[in-house]
Image (cartoon, rainbow, N blue to C red; front, side, top):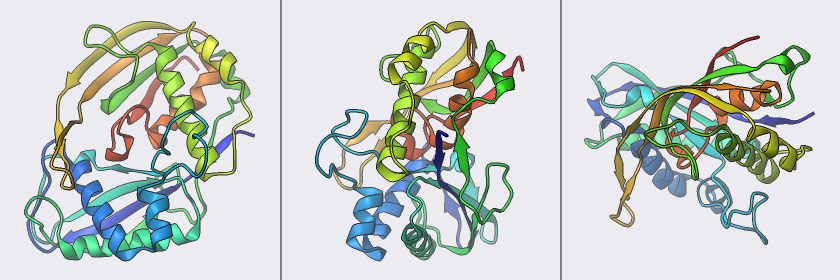
Length: 290
């Protein structure tokens, strides 16, 4: 059975000072501070594994020169918010390396993050708890498992509507005039999930990469209601500015979509496209003809 496991974590804070998050930039703020403090709190092995993974001989399964980081943040609800002293807020994090030592390092880093201060004004906060959630949003002690094989009832699905919740950027697909071609979207999603599992999980997926790709290219884009957003981040390490934009909105596909439906649902947890660590590429299935 083709699956991928991950930790779905929610760090719950209470603000001591006013905590500010820039519009469109909360993920960048959290990711930058988290990486700096992880280096200070974790062992070199854990820090490297989480934040600066490198090739350990040979290319990654998808042909990438460098390994993707095995985590992402979900902070879109914090974009542009001013958190008043005493107010609660949370930061979600999905971690695809499920070894126990990762949890301990993440907890210690979130504690330091609150003490050091978050955002442009470095507002301090107290970490109250870190919840481990399941796919249904309920507390869960077990590691959530994403299934990638369709159920029998799903195989007949011929229409799917997707919502791109956060800016999504796909190499080779997606323009302001037309929505993303399904073949491109699925190829990026397939390769991301396969790489995460092969590098950090239980090993390579048992799938027909070429066959899936060929069938995905036959899916038709029926409608598109997307818009492009622009945002930039500034690296505190290099001082360079980098784009964080992409498209958001909804698209509808038609064709033999049943075998792809579990993968599309998985995109909510894994993200798809460029810069997923910052929270880009959050995709939700909003409707099907099941």
